[in-house]
Amino acid sequence: MTETAIQLNEAVIRIENLNLYYESFHALKNINLDISDKTVTAFIGPSGCGKSTLLRTLNRMNDMIPGTRVEGKVQLGDSDIYGSGMEVETLRKRIGMVFQQPNPFPKSIYDNVAYGPRLHGIRDKARLDELVEQSLRHAALWDEVKDFVRRSALSLSGGQQQRLCIARALAVQPEILLMDEATSALDPISTAKIEELVVELKDRYTIVMVTHNMHQAARVSGKTVFFLNGEVIEAAPTETLFSTPQDSRTEDYISGRFG
Image (cartoon, one colour):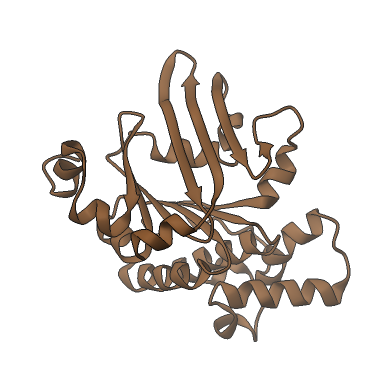
């Protein structure tokens, strides 16, 4: 994706002067960042640099960690997600998440995908059937499981389970999909399928992914953000960041001098 294309996409999330603390530990330091609509944004950086912490901040997963304190603003459209009027359940419907390890529920393939819609009040069988098929299709899994959707999700391979988790996240029709190292536990063939899927999904969803794999970031993302010690060092169109980084620390990281 060209730099011009990135600039044409409006920000769907604006992060302003964000600081996050775990007790006295200052984990995120004065983050200012726009997440572009209908774009794949990759977060890269060494372990412990804050990229997963920021990802979890975007749908308030960090709320579950005792002693977490957030300062600053994360604006989703017209709403501050840390404002008093934001319901966390509503937020997580708008911003779905896929984790590092596939974590299907010990239920059927169908019931995994239907879980979210049912939770949000959808009971009509025809509508559930439609959402399940649509979500499995969007996750590039329908053709592989359509004849046995009532089989246990735990019978699927690891790569299929991760695509099922993506389908489960898509079933509540989110605006944004967060992916936290979503391919790191998978074999190369499954990883390639997930990467192909991400490229296909970007026309429908805004995707933010944390990855340790810089080649993966280069393959699938339109924008890349480099983190170090809880700070955003550089954010740019992916091709620009990898070919002509503006900060020497970015250049040192992507050239393998550390990390």
